[in-house]
Image 1 (cartoon, rainbow, N blue to C red):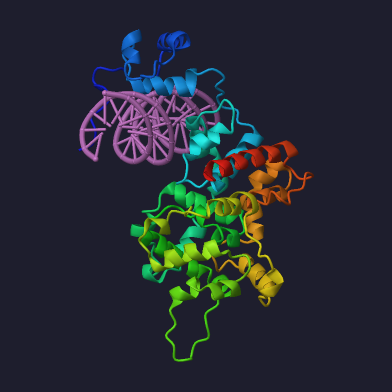
Image 2 (cartoon, helix red, strand yellow):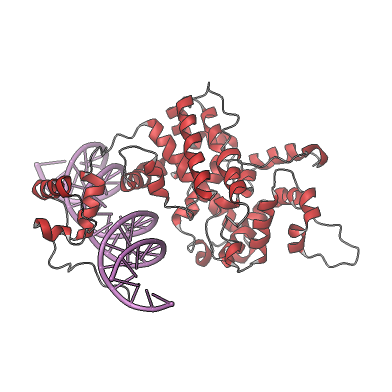
Length: 366
DNA sequence: AAACCGAGCAACCGCTCTAAG
DNA sequence: TCTTAGAGCGGTTGCTCGGTT
């Protein structure tokens, strides 16, 4: 089924636009505007083009102040950061990113990302981290589970992968808003495989109640129980636990996989956009023995789905080249608060990010 | 010099959302 | 309330061009 086409494809011209067509379209819109009706516009000006095609040509090419090519390093950084941090299912990410880059269109940014930036970031990584995670899934018996992994959209996977590469993985777990929008079954499966990869961390984050007291241990309740939450590592917020809880339980309520549940919009957005993690009010009251060293071991272990710091440095040498220092990557961990003006990001850029994230917060605090 | 290949980009496709009737 | 058309978006296709063999 599907809706009827907007025009007769046999009677409209397709392919590249000629200068004459461009000038006709531009002259008309300059004088009369679009009239709010793109479909009727080509007939008015005698163009054998589909209205949608006219609209795209105007928006992506003929519109005043459009820039083409020649993306600056600052634009690269903005695109990378927003692509990683913008929650793909909450907003139209390419247009949001393009809105932060004057003169750039969403199509331009999308093409630039797909042809250049993505390769910079993911190029050599594609073979490694996710295949490791998928191979840890007992259901897969070492063979990638095509039904589940292919069900994840490429963009969701890329965000996931990039976020886990560029940020503290704890922060990723702590930011349910960054998890790709999945069917509860898919989410459960993904979380299971991640959980297995992260088992040392999860033990700290969600310590199991003492077993052997005759009570059946309900692992899902371990995650729900508020006391247990308090025992978890302080860097795991309650909202994260709820997200994991829902995921692990396979709850099918839409709320279980829509990250911004009513009542915690602002908090979750803050977690993702500004701080990366939620610090507890009294972290000292929640001791986790040797967590730091265990965590460092974990991060450096190639057994798990993450490259060592050394690998990361090699992997993202492009950013070292771009920014002059590996430390420039620190801001990608959303650590705006601690960002030092002496590193490779100038203060104007930081202010710009501060502003844009304030906009997002305002937008989602309604 | 010609064939091949891959990157980059413009344009298209098909879907969803939204607003008007 | 339902239907429908327009707008907008992400994903994909196909053309062009430059580099390599």
